[in-house]
Image (cartoon, rainbow, N blue to C red; front, side, top):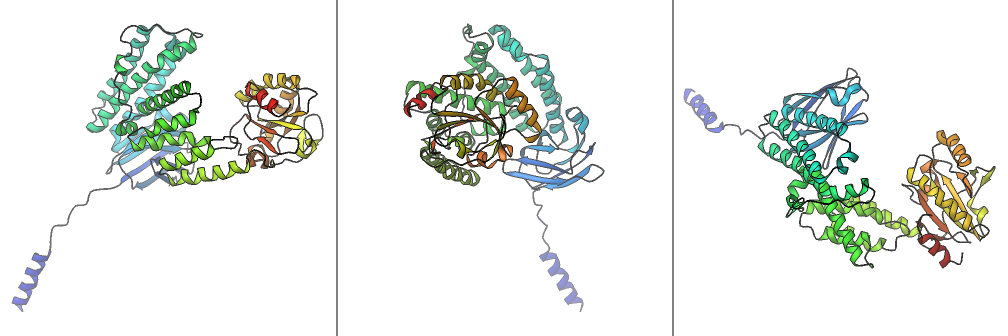
Amino acid sequence: MKKIVFALATLAIVSCKKEEVKPVDYALFSGKITNKNSDTIYVTGKDFKKAIPVKEDGTFNDTLNTAKGKYIVHIGSETSNFHLNQGDNLNLTIDTKEFDETIAYTGEGSVINNYLAKAYMLEEVTNAKMNPRELFASAPEVFISKVKAVQTSADSLLTSFSIKDTDFVAAAKKNNNYTYLAALKNYPRYYQMVSGGKEAVLPEGFSKELDGLDLDNSLDFDNSDSYKGLVMGDVQGKATEATEKDSTLTFAMSFINQVKGLKSDNIKQALITNIAGEIKAGNDESDAIYKEVMAITTDKNLKEKITKQLADSKKLAKGNPSPTFENYENHAGGTTSLADLKGKFVYIDMWATWCGPCKREIPFMKKVEKEYHGKNIEFVSISVDRKNAHDKWKSMVKDGEMTGIQLFADNDFKSKFAVDYGVNSIPRFILLDTEGNIVSADAPRPSDPGLKTLLAEHGI
């Protein structure tokens, strides 16, 4: 028996191996919210979203199974950037009545996140003290001195936290420099804007720090918002230059060409979404843009979205019957339906009382209406204001002596007419023919000389 016991013990010893320690692939996140403003907070990041319930006493806790990187915590209508490393055990305390001022972290990973909170506050204070208009109106030497001082202050704050994560420190310092370089790059254009069109006289070497700057760096694009701004500005600028050299090239296609020339796939994926909105009714290039975006993007949701956009745009192609509206309240009294206007061309303005660009078009609209008065065309303005702005709409139409047919949509942006036309931004202008068919689902604005050209093409 002893031999058997010994043999079993030996077998056990031989069989027992040291258990391998698996690397931690998650972070713990907990906290306490004073003056709780939501029953749920959200943590979002690239391809990541997690809803975390908040208890009655304002406490929360959860495990975040995600990679190292930048994230955003959403608390009610407020947001804050924070950083996660796998293995962190972060605890957040905050009072929503003084959101930015009270953010504080404890636990593993807290040093980086307390730095981020203070860096945001420093930026807020700097922006409050430094009037952007005055900054960009400064002489070049004064401007450089001021923005360099901002960079130095940001670098000093970073150093004061003695962060051990060298990769994070390097990325943060780069971001501070990119913020400075972005201001430098924007100076000539902004100076011209704030000085009434005057061009800045730049000293020799003013832009030398921008020379040779790599604007196709995959890692920096992911790590720095300031770098993203530089990249976007560069692509837009080059696209604009190309259209100025070639009048047959639209900005959308020129932008796509610039994106295709980038080597960093993550930059391509991020930038191509900015042109997807051009797949719309009234744009003759929708098919071509759709084809190019589909070839570049790997985002399944974007592919589904633009496929629907393209299908919807074809429903609103020139010559198709227009979606209709019925019994919209008429400011002059009674109601009006689109069918009531059959026999005349109809130029429709989708607008709202709160929309600045919409209001800037009103004087031009009145001028066009006056010029075309008595001709075979009706000018119709449809407010997509919410019901609680109904009285404001009535007053604005009256006080502004707005002419034409003034209507109030039955359900703001959710009105069937607005939905059928895919109206998600205003102002939006639509031109219909005498039979109620679409001439242009995205017609030129009254301030655009192209409107008169379009009307002339149809004998108006």
